[in-house]
Image (cartoon, rainbow over all chains, first blue to last red; front, side, top):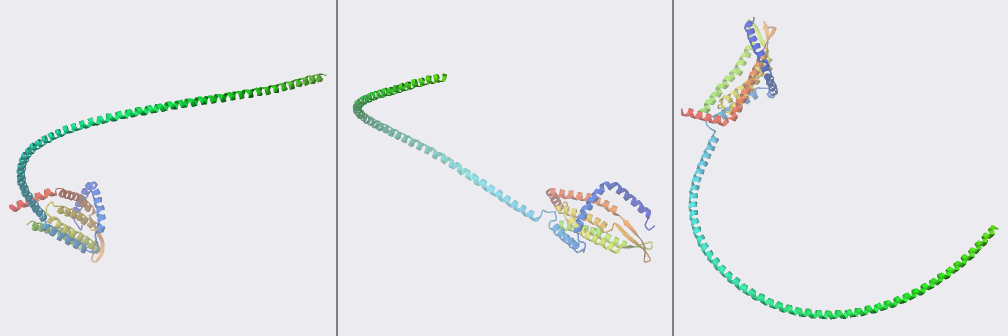
Length: 251
Length: 170
């Protein structure tokens, strides 16, 4: 044989056994791999190796630069700078805090002094204010008394004036009432006389009208009686004529 | 010191990958191209040979460059994780290129005294598929590594800086 056939056969058997054993696990994985590789491979150029060479060079150069700049044993420079800046800022902050604390202590002391001064002044002002208030209250009381007396006097004056005015008004009202009563009586008398005259006139008129009505009634009654007599006569003549007619008809 | 060490490491691994992905396959296929067994010439078709060599050198270049970037990067760094993942994906494509370029089923013409007698085909497709399954697991692992590097970035950095400090002091 060209190759040692037995050895190859044995190898092939081993590989075949492994493949058949792993087939249910490996085949779905393999199919997935084939799928994504088939999708990716059309993007790879098949004309020349130049693009691959360029790509390889770019990756190598990039790797050399990146990994020499940031070897990984130290934090990157920009981080170091940032850390330094942060440290400086922290130191400055601490200094500022110390200064602030000192200033705050000084301000507190001053504030305490100011408080004591303010308390003293406040006490003095309170005393002064009390005295002033008392003086003002006394003045006010005096003024109130004066005002009360004045008001009382004025009220008395007004009352007397009012009484006088009321008396005058009463006398005037009484006079006017008397005059009005007299006028009313005169007017009543006039009205009574007028009413009486009117009643007499009306009575006379009514009597006349009654007489007229009576005469009229009598005339009408007479006329009706004459008409009735005439109609009676007519009825008699017609009854006689009827009797004659009956007799004629019997015959 | 760290930078040069990384650089050297990257270079060494790049050389290893160049030899394993490009030089050895190239030599093998050139040797196979016209092999003589027991006085019989077994010839690999020129077109097939060119296609195989093209894909081997294309992906070999990319893999080697990625290996340089990967191995020159600091340990457990995100860039290392990224390039390791890319390298694995390229490896898959490289292995797959053996299949679609025809290398998994190589046809050898048997030539005796300038006359073509017949041909032999060596089919290793199933082997490639098995290898793909293994690579799938590697991709999953590398993906997990990448996520781990991203999530625990600060911790990893601090440990690394401490180690570097300790090495420097000693």
